[in-house]
Image 1 (tube, one colour):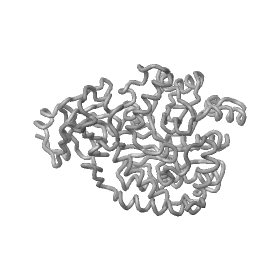
Image 2 (cartoon, one colour):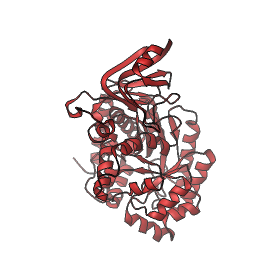
Image 3 (cartoon, one colour):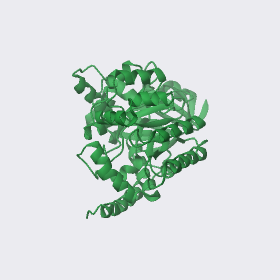
Image 4 (cartoon, helix red, strand yellow):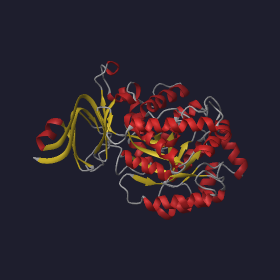
Length: 442
């Protein structure tokens, strides 16, 4: 019998592998940061003894969720400006509020609070774009979360970079500093084609190519944006991206609401990926992304919450539910976006979007032990005929009992082990007081 660090058992194990293998009475064996065996509980306990036993009857044991697009520190701006269109929201509220208030303190505590919220709702990996991303990396490291981060790049000054060149230099510094970290990875993130010049977009590609890191941006979030970009660049957004060489397997884009057949064909031909943000798109009335068509084209589509100022939470179970139901409603077809597809977008597909499929997104020997355990012994989850149906349509983030990331228990029995959540909430409350003052609110 082999002695290991942690043995997880007590429920149905969903592996999310190619065959959707599941074990009704399953278990997962963990040694260090990796999974070393997945299978039937009786087989696993005969083969392994463990220092730590996590046994939760009537549970679902599944890969940790992947939030493929968010702005973590924007927890500090949760609910600050609601019920308005995208450009009004950005230009007249969010950008001014950020210019007056974002600093390293806000970025750190806002990100740490986001990590607490994400862990408590089953997310083990997130992709982030914001300002002072060194602080987000530091918060994620403190929380023990896996992440892919990038400093947002604009043509105009930010609280952290007076020029695009400074933003690129800061990004390169991040890439070098976190190059060998087991949890924190870095990408290059120009904000969008309408806030970045062609020169900045091309320089972003050069930097991403130099270090072979991902390159991502907001793209075609609304139909008006598509027309704005065509007027600015004299060509379609995706045509510009193709001609500048930005479209490749390391490129992924957020929203993509206004993509048409030609756009999707270009993405599919070049191996580009998409992050679907249904709740944010709905709240800002941006439209409905053609996700079913993207999937038919063979595009890998992940799922993300976007930031707390446009969602207004980071619960990926809610995002799954919305993604499935919105697609059915938009196409008047109850068969599209099945529950299993929504769950896969939030796990394995999300990992593929971020270039992390070798490490996370499914439960199998050799993968990192990023695991979400859901307590199904609850009235609203009883009875259960199909696990995927319950995950997409019944489960909420508050049903998550225990979370492991990289083989470390970061939450057990709803108690965070790496974050003092009361301190994080209190610090963000203090920050919100100065935000209100800066906006002339009392």
